[in-house]
Amino acid sequence: MSSCTNSTARSNTPQELLLFQKTPCYGTCPAYNATFYSDGTVLYEGLRYVPVQDTLSLRLTKNQLQEVQATLKDLNHTSLENNYLSTFTDIPSSYLTFYKDNKEVKRIKHQQEGPEKLQQVIKQLHELVMQLLNERQE
Picture 1 (cartoon, rainbow, N blue to C red):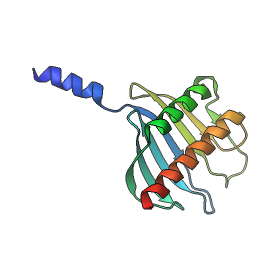
Picture 2: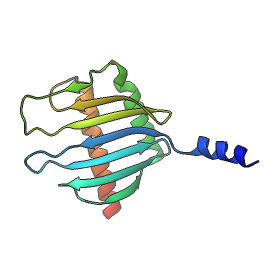
Picture 3: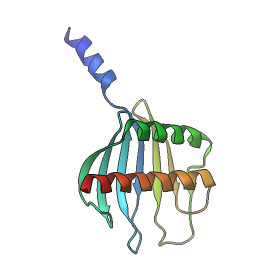
Picture 4: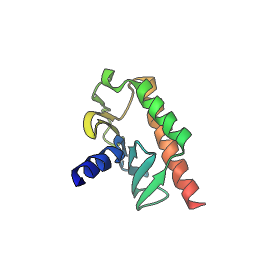
């Protein structure tokens, strides 16, 4: 009986969808990690130059979760390069690590240029994380 319960519990465990990371620069660039899960949970770890320098569990609404999932699907990450780098040393990086069945399937490092769609997704994810932090503080 207990083995049935364990497998059921495992199947109900939220799956990692994406690890979104913003790295520091020599200035005041926000640095944090945000892991998005299939149940709408976002595990946030604020590092530098962010409104909250702590580890928090944030929550997406159902609509926000569906929007994130649709955006990630539309991005078609498998067609993207692994790196979009800059020759400048002071530029921060954004990492997008994609998961399927809790296993990493693709990691993209973005510093500069690259497809417009990728740049838009990075901007949207950053704005969403900041919005979730602001709502939590209110």
